Image (cartoon, rainbow, N blue to C red; front, side, top):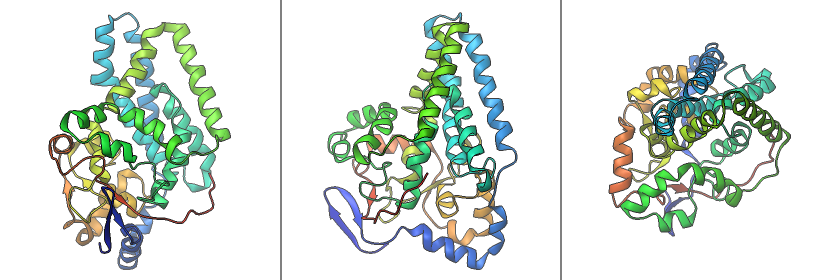
Length: 323
């Protein structure tokens, strides 16, 4: 990747994101990849099963002591909830019901959101579009830490704290970096979510609500699955801004680890991304990638050359927005 310039401590580049050109090259050479685009017929059933498992868990934890509520929130429920956030990620690309059924996808994401405990899906969709359209874009891609995060969380202990606080930063950063008007879908998302929370509280008390929300917060913080937050775009090797992960946790995360492939072809559902890698192997096999999210987290904390500043940034022209 050429034209690198250091400004502050981010890696500033003055080139287009690499995924656009690679997508054109791969499709020209392997047009059969277009057949992989479209909905995943199994996604809605898998997600529905996960949602109902969490509702069953709400019933089962209602009489447990608080220590066991938090234990199961971290060890079990939070894993499902984190997986559901990644299902929502896939659904945001319309792969549950297809592009022609955009509203079905939006409302199904609201349904997938229910065990997470707090409204998330509509806001995620609104900002995730920008992450793909303006990868690394200054003030546009809210996946990139702020200057304060890069400056302050620079020692092992502080980086460990930053990992614990990731859910907080992911929630608040968009409001500071790129605030947007609240949409009708976000209001609907919140009304449905809080209504279901109240029903659960009425039926089974406070412990199931804490189980759901604590699981979400804990498993999006310092947890093996959360390694994907760091693995995807933190610059472990200079000049590479997106990385795939090919380890076993892809089975639990809708293949979010195939992140290079996902950014090249965001309309291909996660279940088919390994086929992209297999068909266009020469484009992916020699790129740097990860095999362990735990190792990624360890390196992030203890390697002095890696931290919140380890991101590629570029200037992007804002396009007309629509949701």
